[in-house]
Length: 213
Image 1 (cartoon, rainbow, N blue to C red):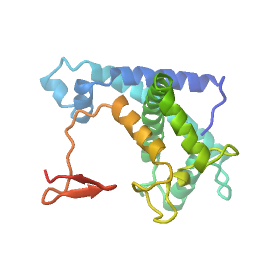
Image 2 (cartoon, one colour; image 1 turned 30 degrees about the horizontal axis):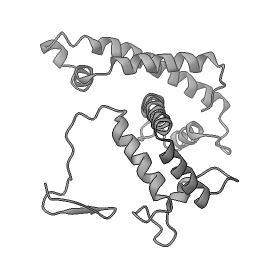
Image 3 (tube, rainbow, N blue to C red; image 1 turned 45 degrees about the horizontal axis):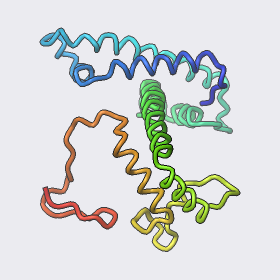
């Protein structure tokens, strides 16, 4: 799924996503999950507006899917949508690969992927501007591992000796900085308390001990 920079559909879709994220709050989230609450708490007025914008985004996604169906070459999938549509044709609408699920997946990619990614990148750039020494240290580490002839990839984070993500990854400082930016930025609502699911013992993750409970 690719758009040109001046594609009016992309601009309209991004405007809808922006409006939608402005409507998301604790009350709207509750009403979205439990619509019956609107009968008990009619002041949850953000949800109806949220639903209208959400439906507009889903309509855009449906139009994109329709365009892909018209041009679909089952022997040459060019992107995620093509691959999904081919799988749908194999199994029919009765499988979990169906139109309703596809619309949901595509809308989630736009909504969740655009707002949170934009926010995280903005916080990352801001922190690098405010902390040039850290930026230089990251650049030195990337140059040492990747060089300047190509772009970094996820494989550059993995230590080939253990073939896994761990404290001995090849770019630990860069990895730690990214994690710290995501911790600091908090680009998505994380109001629900989090804890380790295993409650009967301590848990070790990437060399760090997380105490029981």
